[in-house]
Each structure stands twice: as structure tokens, then as C-alpha cells.
Image (cartoon, rainbow, N blue to C red; front, side, top):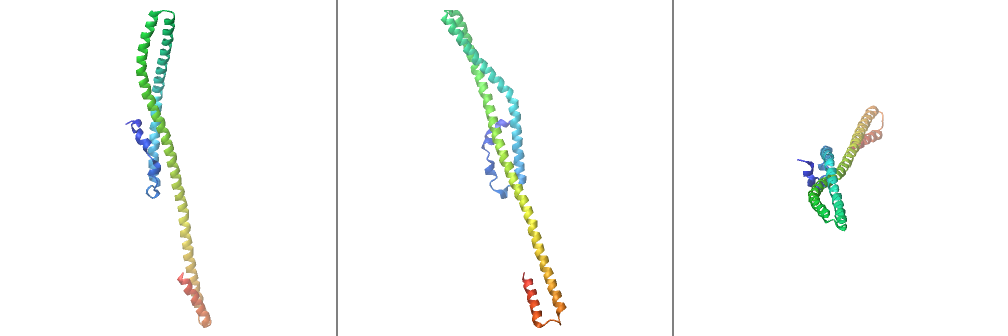
Length: 201
């Protein structure tokens, strides 16, 4: 199936609508879609190159036909003005045949030109879609990098808090044990209160 047969589908696609919910579209999905669009763009390029020569030939043949019609019109006019009716009739017969050929040449040219116009439109559409997805991919990667930086920091902070708590608790216990029998009752109570407050954290 040629790329031109997919013209309507490609032109009707909307990558913005397809990726409007970030939680349902991860980096892998975006890359897969992006690869698909790049493949389509490659086919459009190949088809354009393949049809370029055909288009140029069709346009040249049609242009030459029009030029021949104009030339015969001038000959007919000059022959008629000079009274050379025989030559005028010959030119008219030739002109009729050239015009008949021109109809088929115009039809062929219109078809090829239509294909080239479609390929050009798909080329522009695919390039725009690829740019959109590359931007989307960059956004996703940026968010992932940001998230990867935030999570370790939070974990490290939590670990430091836990370590500080354990150290404080151990110091309080050691101080209580060391000062037992030597400190006053009020001092022991103050240490116990410190321990209790630390334990609640």
C-alpha cells in the first residue's frame, strides 16, 4: 500500500489529542509513535523523489502542447489574412489534433500534480507532528530527570532524620545511665523529659 493511499489518515491525525493525558502516554509510547511518523516521512520523501521526474515530464509535455496550440493559432491567422485558405485549413486540422492531445496531457498533468501536492502536504504535516512529539518527549524526559533528582534527596533527608533521632536517643540513654546515683531527682526528670520528647518525633 503506497503512502498516498494513507493521505486522509495522515492529514486527519492529531498528535495533540492523542497525547493530552500524560499518565496514559509514557516515553516508550511517544518514541514508538515518533518512529512511526519518521518512517512515514521517509516514505513520503521516497515517493516524492520517484514522482518528481514523472511530474516534470508531464508538465513539460503539457506546456509544449499549449505552446504548439498558440503557434498554430498564429499560423492560421496569418494564412487567413494572406488569403491562403488551403494552408489555413491544414493548420486548423493540425490544431484540432494538438488540442485533442492536450486534453489527455492536461488530465495526466493534473493527476501527477495532485499527487505531488498531496505529498507536499503530508511532508509538512508529518514534520509538524514530529516536532510536536519531539517536544513532548523532551518534556517527559525533563520531568523524569526532575523526579529522579527529587526522590533521592527526600530519601536522604528522611534517613538523616532517622539517624539523628537514633543518635539523640542513644546519647540520652547513655547520659541517664552515667548520671544515675549522682544527679539530683530534678536532673533525672529533665533527662527523661528530653528522651520522651525525642521519642515522640
